Image (cartoon, rainbow, N blue to C red; front, side):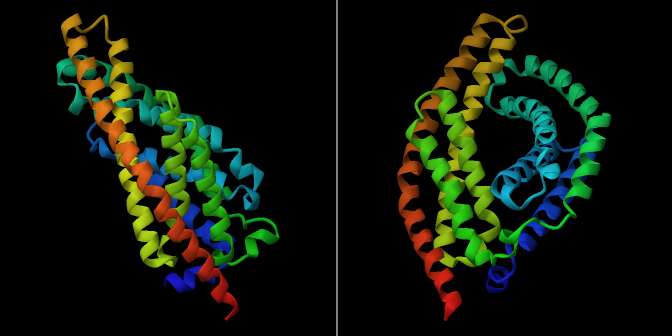
Length: 281
């Protein structure tokens, strides 16, 4: 199956991947309700992210009308994320649990309004229709094995540039987004490259988990600022103290993962180049 994937034109691979992600996003967005598992909100947000990453990774072969939908995807992903952020905090900040429930109710009402809006209906409709268009240009005819090293390499270089500037919380958040983009870009091709791909993927997963833990702590501090009128000073101080402690733990884990990633990338890059050369044998 992996070998077969490598010999399929990249345009066909992209079209299939986008179709799957769009179907999942549409189903998950439709399933969001007060009675549904909160994880549905998280999964819908992830699918929106995956589609947006595909827009960036495969921009040269996608129609401008499809890429134009990115702003609407960003809008609904932000609405999903606003609720998801509060859901995560419930596990980390029990000191302000009652206040978080009030905030979640407000954000969930906004989300349900957004999901029921004409803008969302148009987004889903256009995503479905535009994704059926054939990828554009000569590049779309290149085999996946030929195109993958450049596509993945570009995402890795973007991540590496952000890594060199990561000092503040905002910088780390930007690096986190680049890491997600790298993982989602790499994911469709992972089965082609065997053991080096598995090692690289595991390292990316560990890094993403550490980034997530760090960002959850940052969000705690941000949300606490919005709850000053609802929670006591003691509750707020405790929540911030615990959040700062979690940030330090997560930062140490991020540093470890960042140190471990480059060697796994070198092995993967070597395997990608070797696999591509075999096309001529």
